Image (cartoon, rainbow, N blue to C red; front, side, top):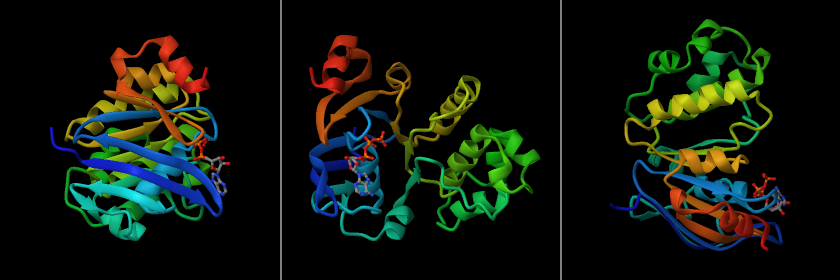
Length: 233
Ligand code: ATP
Protein backbone atom coordinates (compact mmCIF):
# COMPACT_ATOMS: atom_id res chain seq x y z
CA UNK A 1 0.00 0.00 0.00
CA UNK A 2 1.34 3.53 -0.72
CA UNK A 3 2.44 5.58 2.27
CA UNK A 4 0.29 8.51 3.40
CA UNK A 5 2.61 9.87 6.08
CA UNK A 6 6.29 9.12 6.37
CA UNK A 7 8.59 10.42 9.11
CA UNK A 8 12.26 9.97 8.43
CA UNK A 9 14.68 10.44 11.31
CA UNK A 10 13.02 13.52 12.76
CA UNK A 11 14.46 15.43 15.69
CA UNK A 12 12.19 17.82 17.57
CA UNK A 13 13.20 20.33 20.23
CA UNK A 14 11.47 22.54 22.78
CA UNK A 15 13.99 25.38 22.91
CA UNK A 16 17.29 23.71 23.77
CA UNK A 17 15.66 20.54 25.01
CA UNK A 18 15.37 17.68 22.56
CA UNK A 19 12.09 15.76 22.98
CA UNK A 20 12.12 13.50 19.88
CA UNK A 21 15.26 11.68 18.72
CA UNK A 22 15.56 10.35 15.18
CA UNK A 23 12.03 8.98 14.91
CA UNK A 24 10.94 7.25 11.70
CA UNK A 25 7.51 5.80 11.07
CA UNK A 26 4.94 5.34 8.33
CA UNK A 27 1.16 5.51 8.14
CA UNK A 28 -0.77 4.03 5.20
CA UNK A 29 -4.09 5.44 3.94
CA UNK A 30 -6.96 4.20 6.11
CA UNK A 31 -4.65 2.77 8.76
CA UNK A 32 -4.96 3.34 12.51
CA UNK A 33 -1.60 3.70 14.21
CA UNK A 34 -1.49 3.77 18.00
CA UNK A 35 1.31 5.75 19.57
CA UNK A 36 1.92 4.67 23.16
CA UNK A 37 4.47 5.52 25.81
CA UNK A 38 4.78 6.89 29.35
CA UNK A 39 4.33 10.55 30.24
CA UNK A 40 7.02 12.65 28.63
CA UNK A 41 7.90 10.03 26.00
CA UNK A 42 7.47 12.62 23.25
CA UNK A 43 4.13 11.53 21.77
CA UNK A 44 2.45 14.95 21.82
CA UNK A 45 5.62 16.57 20.54
CA UNK A 46 5.65 14.15 17.60
CA UNK A 47 2.04 15.02 16.74
CA UNK A 48 2.86 18.72 16.99
CA UNK A 49 5.78 18.24 14.60
CA UNK A 50 3.52 16.57 12.02
CA UNK A 51 1.04 19.45 12.23
CA UNK A 52 3.76 22.09 12.05
CA UNK A 53 2.97 23.54 15.51
CA UNK A 54 6.45 22.55 16.76
CA UNK A 55 8.39 22.04 13.53
CA UNK A 56 11.00 19.28 13.41
CA UNK A 57 14.53 20.70 13.46
CA UNK A 58 15.68 18.17 10.89
CA UNK A 59 14.71 14.95 9.18
CA UNK A 60 11.82 14.69 6.71
CA UNK A 61 8.05 14.59 7.17
CA UNK A 62 6.38 13.51 3.93
CA UNK A 63 2.64 13.60 3.38
CA UNK A 64 1.42 12.07 0.15
CA UNK A 65 5.01 12.17 -1.05
CA UNK A 66 5.55 15.89 -0.37
CA UNK A 67 8.01 17.10 2.28
CA UNK A 68 5.81 19.21 4.58
CA UNK A 69 8.35 19.67 7.38
CA UNK A 70 9.04 23.32 6.46
CA UNK A 71 5.43 24.30 5.77
CA UNK A 72 3.46 26.54 8.16
CA UNK A 73 0.72 24.81 10.18
CA UNK A 74 -2.13 26.32 8.12
CA UNK A 75 -0.75 24.87 4.90
CA UNK A 76 -0.31 21.47 6.50
CA UNK A 77 -3.96 21.58 7.62
CA UNK A 78 -5.01 22.53 4.09
CA UNK A 79 -3.26 19.44 2.76
CA UNK A 80 -5.45 17.27 4.99
CA UNK A 81 -3.93 16.76 8.44
CA UNK A 82 -6.08 17.62 11.49
CA UNK A 83 -5.23 17.43 15.19
CA UNK A 84 -7.54 16.77 18.13
CA UNK A 85 -5.24 18.35 20.72
CA UNK A 86 -4.62 17.16 24.25
CA UNK A 87 -7.03 18.98 26.57
CA UNK A 88 -9.39 19.67 23.62
CA UNK A 89 -8.61 23.42 23.47
CA UNK A 90 -12.10 24.52 22.47
CA UNK A 91 -12.84 28.21 22.00
CA UNK A 92 -14.52 29.05 25.34
CA UNK A 93 -16.49 32.07 24.12
CA UNK A 94 -18.00 30.19 21.15
CA UNK A 95 -21.00 27.88 20.98
CA UNK A 96 -20.76 24.21 20.07
CA UNK A 97 -21.74 24.96 16.48
CA UNK A 98 -19.33 27.89 16.19
CA UNK A 99 -16.52 25.66 17.46
CA UNK A 100 -17.40 23.06 14.85
CA UNK A 101 -17.45 25.68 12.12
CA UNK A 102 -13.92 26.77 13.09
CA UNK A 103 -12.79 23.41 11.68
CA UNK A 104 -14.40 24.23 8.35
CA UNK A 105 -12.15 27.29 7.99
CA UNK A 106 -9.86 24.78 6.25
CA UNK A 107 -11.93 24.36 3.12
CA UNK A 108 -11.69 20.78 1.95
CA UNK A 109 -14.45 18.83 0.26
CA UNK A 110 -15.65 15.56 1.78
CA UNK A 111 -18.21 13.68 3.82
CA UNK A 112 -18.11 15.84 6.93
CA UNK A 113 -20.33 18.89 7.46
CA UNK A 114 -22.62 20.03 10.27
CA UNK A 115 -25.37 17.62 9.34
CA UNK A 116 -23.18 14.50 9.04
CA UNK A 117 -21.46 15.43 12.29
CA UNK A 118 -24.75 15.86 14.13
CA UNK A 119 -25.77 12.44 12.84
CA UNK A 120 -22.53 11.04 14.31
CA UNK A 121 -22.92 12.80 17.68
CA UNK A 122 -26.65 13.66 18.05
CA UNK A 123 -26.12 15.25 21.47
CA UNK A 124 -24.11 18.02 19.79
CA UNK A 125 -27.14 18.96 17.71
CA UNK A 126 -29.21 19.26 20.87
CA UNK A 127 -26.58 21.48 22.51
CA UNK A 128 -25.44 23.30 19.37
CA UNK A 129 -26.33 26.79 20.65
CA UNK A 130 -24.70 26.34 24.07
CA UNK A 131 -21.24 27.63 24.94
CA UNK A 132 -18.97 24.63 24.34
CA UNK A 133 -17.38 24.87 27.77
CA UNK A 134 -20.74 24.29 29.51
CA UNK A 135 -20.84 20.73 28.09
CA UNK A 136 -19.54 17.68 29.95
CA UNK A 137 -15.95 16.59 29.32
CA UNK A 138 -17.05 13.80 27.00
CA UNK A 139 -19.33 16.07 25.00
CA UNK A 140 -16.51 18.60 24.71
CA UNK A 141 -14.30 15.84 23.36
CA UNK A 142 -16.95 15.10 20.74
CA UNK A 143 -16.83 18.78 19.75
CA UNK A 144 -13.03 18.59 19.49
CA UNK A 145 -13.21 15.47 17.30
CA UNK A 146 -16.01 17.07 15.27
CA UNK A 147 -14.08 20.29 14.76
CA UNK A 148 -11.15 18.29 13.38
CA UNK A 149 -13.42 16.25 11.09
CA UNK A 150 -15.03 19.42 9.69
CA UNK A 151 -11.81 20.04 7.76
CA UNK A 152 -12.34 16.68 6.00
CA UNK A 153 -8.80 15.50 6.71
CA UNK A 154 -7.04 12.49 5.21
CA UNK A 155 -5.14 12.01 8.45
CA UNK A 156 -6.58 12.61 11.92
CA UNK A 157 -4.19 12.91 14.87
CA UNK A 158 -5.83 12.33 18.26
CA UNK A 159 -4.00 13.18 21.48
CA UNK A 160 -5.33 11.38 24.56
CA UNK A 161 -9.03 11.42 23.71
CA UNK A 162 -10.05 9.50 26.80
CA UNK A 163 -8.07 11.43 29.41
CA UNK A 164 -10.27 12.19 32.41
CA UNK A 165 -13.48 10.90 30.80
CA UNK A 166 -15.99 8.39 32.17
CA UNK A 167 -15.60 4.90 30.62
CA UNK A 168 -19.08 4.99 29.04
CA UNK A 169 -18.27 8.21 27.19
CA UNK A 170 -14.93 6.84 26.04
CA UNK A 171 -16.82 3.82 24.65
CA UNK A 172 -19.18 6.10 22.77
CA UNK A 173 -16.35 8.10 21.22
CA UNK A 174 -14.49 4.96 20.16
CA UNK A 175 -17.70 3.47 18.73
CA UNK A 176 -17.91 6.53 16.49
CA UNK A 177 -14.45 5.66 15.18
CA UNK A 178 -15.72 2.85 13.02
CA UNK A 179 -17.90 5.39 11.18
CA UNK A 180 -15.07 7.92 11.10
CA UNK A 181 -12.77 5.33 9.48
CA UNK A 182 -15.33 4.31 6.88
CA UNK A 183 -14.17 6.82 4.26
CA UNK A 184 -10.58 5.65 4.40
CA UNK A 185 -9.37 8.27 6.89
CA UNK A 186 -6.06 7.36 8.53
CA UNK A 187 -5.74 7.95 12.27
CA UNK A 188 -2.80 8.32 14.64
CA UNK A 189 -3.99 7.78 18.15
CA UNK A 190 -2.13 8.69 21.33
CA UNK A 191 -3.86 6.75 24.09
CA UNK A 192 -2.86 5.93 27.68
CA UNK A 193 -4.93 2.75 27.72
CA UNK A 194 -2.55 0.24 26.12
CA UNK A 195 -5.14 -2.54 25.80
CA UNK A 196 -7.49 -0.21 23.96
CA UNK A 197 -4.64 1.07 21.81
CA UNK A 198 -3.89 -2.47 20.66
CA UNK A 199 -7.56 -3.30 20.13
CA UNK A 200 -8.40 -0.33 17.90
CA UNK A 201 -5.19 -0.07 15.87
CA UNK A 202 -3.52 -1.84 12.97
CA UNK A 203 -0.01 -0.86 13.98
CA UNK A 204 1.58 0.12 17.25
CA UNK A 205 4.55 2.37 17.94
CA UNK A 206 5.92 2.70 21.46
CA UNK A 207 8.14 5.61 22.46
CA UNK A 208 10.40 5.97 25.44
CA UNK A 209 12.36 9.13 26.22
CA UNK A 210 11.87 10.46 22.69
CA UNK A 211 12.87 7.27 20.85
CA UNK A 212 10.92 4.46 19.24
CA UNK A 213 11.34 1.28 21.28
CA UNK A 214 8.80 -0.91 19.52
CA UNK A 215 7.00 -0.82 16.16
CA UNK A 216 4.89 -3.47 14.46
CA UNK A 217 1.47 -4.96 13.89
CA UNK A 218 -0.71 -4.41 16.97
CA UNK A 219 -2.05 -7.96 17.10
CA UNK A 220 1.47 -9.41 17.04
CA UNK A 221 2.63 -7.71 20.25
CA UNK A 222 2.76 -9.61 23.53
CA UNK A 223 2.14 -7.89 26.84
CA UNK A 224 5.71 -8.58 27.90
CA UNK A 225 7.16 -7.03 24.78
CA UNK A 226 4.99 -3.93 25.15
CA UNK A 227 5.87 -3.61 28.85
CA UNK A 228 9.58 -3.84 28.06
CA UNK A 229 9.29 -1.17 25.35
CA UNK A 230 7.10 1.04 27.55
CA UNK A 231 9.24 0.95 30.69
CA UNK A 232 12.63 0.23 29.12
CA UNK A 233 13.24 -2.96 31.05
P1 ATP B 1 2.26 13.20 28.04
O1 ATP B 1 1.54 11.94 28.09
O2 ATP B 1 2.66 13.70 29.39
O3 ATP B 1 1.61 14.27 27.20
P2 ATP B 1 4.12 12.85 25.87
O4 ATP B 1 4.64 11.50 25.52
O5 ATP B 1 3.09 13.42 25.00
O6 ATP B 1 3.66 12.85 27.37
P3 ATP B 1 5.51 15.28 25.38
O7 ATP B 1 4.40 16.11 25.94
O8 ATP B 1 5.73 15.27 23.94
O9 ATP B 1 5.37 13.79 25.89
O10 ATP B 1 6.85 15.72 26.12
C1 ATP B 1 8.15 15.26 25.74
C2 ATP B 1 9.19 16.05 26.50
O11 ATP B 1 9.15 17.40 26.07
C3 ATP B 1 8.95 16.06 28.00
O12 ATP B 1 10.21 16.00 28.64
C4 ATP B 1 8.29 17.40 28.25
O13 ATP B 1 8.60 17.87 29.52
C5 ATP B 1 8.92 18.26 27.18
N1 ATP B 1 8.02 19.33 26.72
C6 ATP B 1 6.79 19.17 26.19
N2 ATP B 1 6.25 20.35 25.86
C7 ATP B 1 7.15 21.29 26.17
C8 ATP B 1 7.23 22.71 26.06
N3 ATP B 1 6.21 23.41 25.55
N4 ATP B 1 8.34 23.34 26.49
C9 ATP B 1 9.38 22.65 27.01
N5 ATP B 1 9.41 21.30 27.15
C10 ATP B 1 8.32 20.63 26.73
